[in-house]
Length: 385
Image 1 (cartoon, rainbow, N blue to C red):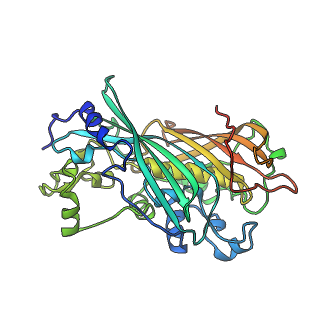
Image 2: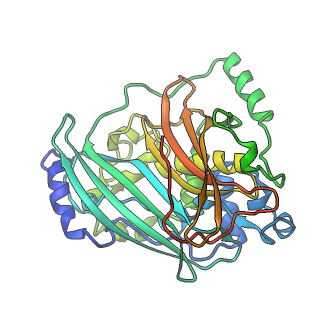
Image 3: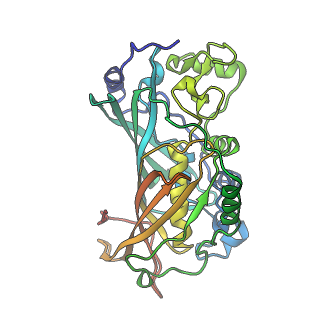
């Protein structure tokens, strides 16, 4: 059984040797935006936008090709790391990606050859209650060596804190209402341009509903983000260098069980300090991105997205996405290209009305006779809430 001999402060200290380098728990994902890879990703988020699913539609779009959604970069390399935690045997700690921010400079066309380079840039110990170590990783993504996105993610490592509630149970009336909403979800903006001059502060974003979160959702996301899913002897060998991942399975007694499996295993989630299986923050981030591209339409461009988690999205939870236009501005870029930007806020709440995340995003929109010119160059002037 794990012990309390490894503290969050010890994790911070051990992680310092990885500063400027890739974390030991970080592995490469896909390398090409093939139709299959993109399709798996959008299916895992329930995205029905034909720009990301239909080759023929994409060919006839303003881009001349099917695209991958902006958050598809998460499948190239997961941008978060818990530092040295997985190498430290005997710990009784839990980790969670508590915030993510991303900036894009271009779109991702079908067939793009993608690369990524990540490094841990900070490991800070907070002795508060509960004591927490925060590990920040920055990842740069490329297409044929050219920058396309930058993502930073911060993971909080702390002592166990089991969720105070169990899996939510829905009444018959709840189910009827959810089914009605899911079956009547508004369509995305699609090929009809959303012009900057037609978007005003206070305008609401269409509301989307995701869930209830199922085992299939969790497992399909694992495949979508191209995480290695090994079994048998291969899994055993992979864990050999990561003793911080070993646990005794509470159901079978197997002592080399991977505690990361607890994120999708309701029978054993408590063994890793979880009250129930929970959605990775990266999945929630992708859902937030979908909410924004749903609003912006084919001609819009998601420039920046910043998200902070408030409470986990548990197995069985729904996620209600809502937002508004917070601001808009016009910018003359260093290259003399004009940028028409809007600041959006979006939140995700569960079926209990609890805030799961809060986010803000900058989206570039076209104007009549003027498209969004890409790739972006120069230093962006961004606004925040």
